[in-house]
Length: 387
Figure 1: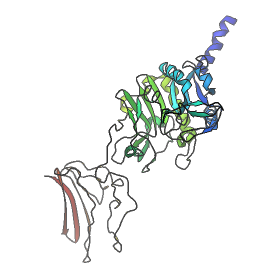
Figure 2: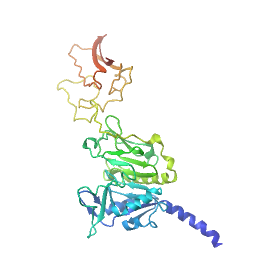
Figure 3: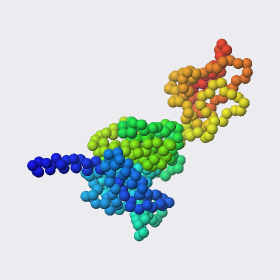
Figure 4: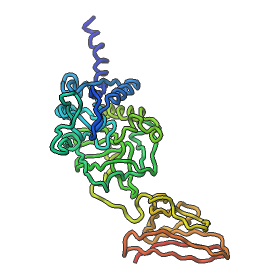
């Protein structure tokens, strides 16, 4: 009888073990000019996961080096937070991810960047401390996951329209969007074999993809899930992101599902992040401030703002199309041989047409404005023509 019961008892324990999440336990707090390690954040992460039926256990640096205590058969994922990692665990990370384990960064502008080790007093310090920036490591971010941090301030913080993707809403249906808000990010460039799958997608003002706020990165068979800010996982900005625990849980549920089904991610879910230094086109930048309006002249009709940007306008109008802007949104771009018209009641008082426009391709298109009167209606037409 005992021989028959033993496998039945072991099966649930094995399944439970495979669903565990390892959370790094730094043991001590350290506040450094280059990084912050706060043990309370890791305790909070483990507490949140356990409270949502995602078994999590805290493992010290030494325990993570032990292949019996920490391995991909026992743990679905490993959670780090803050961008720093113990240099002594590099071999453990490589082994874990090679065996299918998923690494999770719970909040860092640049994930897996800063190597650290404990000094004689037990505090965490950059490893090595000299020469300058020698602690900045590519051994995880680039070598395991195929991402490079490119230092170019012109390419930092360019995300403006942030959208929760179906992949995030699969696990957090109420995940919100963050429209028209410039959020801090760093420029992470994938190599050709690397794919980025956004959970909270970030578009620049010109609709090009930049580093997402939350994303999955996969290079060959290795996978990581990254949050670029603690607001999404630890609730540091509840006014902007109100349900951080749900997002943390969603990220780890995604890890479990990816372990069970590596083919969950499909090519159509990936985005092409800008890989070259790319400036904005005419008026395709962030608003320069409040709209500048003429004093003493109330507007009869208004489309958009006079603030150096066209972000508040609607998508471009296709070539060879003409629309009535009185009844439809005003497009931000008129393609070849397209136009918009609108009308206002006629009046003997002076009327002024104030237009903000830019030519995107000099020598290719020509911007023209016409004003006419038809049956006590002033008709204004803006259109482009090929030259």
